[in-house]
Image (cartoon, rainbow, N blue to C red; front, side, top):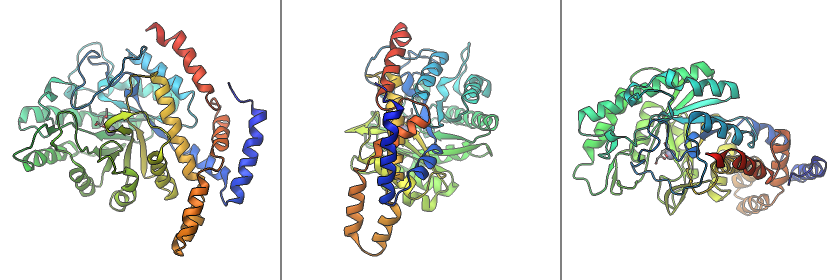
Length: 419
Ligand code: RNT
Ligand code: ZN
């Protein structure tokens, strides 16, 4: 299925000329694309199971559906699967790890986790030459069963999760230091109520106080992020950590806000929010996801919103201020393919943004020439992005076109199907 190099290179040459005439430098676009990392979420590899209690219930408003065979059951299996995906994805990326992916022979409570429980992951990232991001896991645990963690009225429960988050920040700081590349640590809690609360203030005050305690010490090799949500299964009426809550909190503390594409009203797009948020915040974290009717965490496709998100990042040269993470978990398809499709699509969307004649479109806009703005933006959509993308894959030594699927099928036959 692989397109031979001698056939496809002329396609790139002609695409380059076509773009040049349109005012777009494809070589500059490829260079910029090569420098944008995507943080690949480990949890697509095992349906957010983790290695603490792999048969445990997920809960806390998170749901994974599907029972496709071959999910990773051990850290080594998950790393092997990630290596396979990385071999099919052009560019240099990052791993995004949750705290439940610790490695230990004996039970370690979440408030007692240490860097050594993640040393295997740090060493693996070092061997792969990639950065590492981290997340406290405030779900799938008896102490999260009430639906409230950092905003619980029970001081003992609250302290347990505060201590877990503090431990995570210490570990993340070590990760960043060892890898010489800052870790982004994202705090998301499921807290909320199924039905109408009598008091909306007290839980939010408690969440704020808990976060203040968690963030009370410096972590120079770590960047903190907080992630809002609109609703979850079982928290339909009220979510403590709403968008307004975290937007205000992140601005006050000058930390990162995490915008998850599935955490807003269905017609409310995070692409539209990036420009406003970055007027007040130093940096952002994105959870690139795809909600289908609800926060369903489908594999991201090359759709309008993905293109709009990518375009906002590159057209404004926000690559250094927006950390791109993925957040989807589909257990109904091959999990290595899910990663590959999602990351390749994200990169392809960034490339589409980089291949827009932004200067011309903006000049037209400034002159009030909205006809030209619309005309150019529409013409750009059918320029030969595919030929430039294939060239990016070729230069990065990864399969061109759907040839990567053969590699995944092979891996499925030799490895995944034996699990
Ligand atoms: C949940 C949040 C959160 C999780 C992951 C597993 O609604 O999106 O980011 O999906 O941390
Ligand atoms: Zn998320």
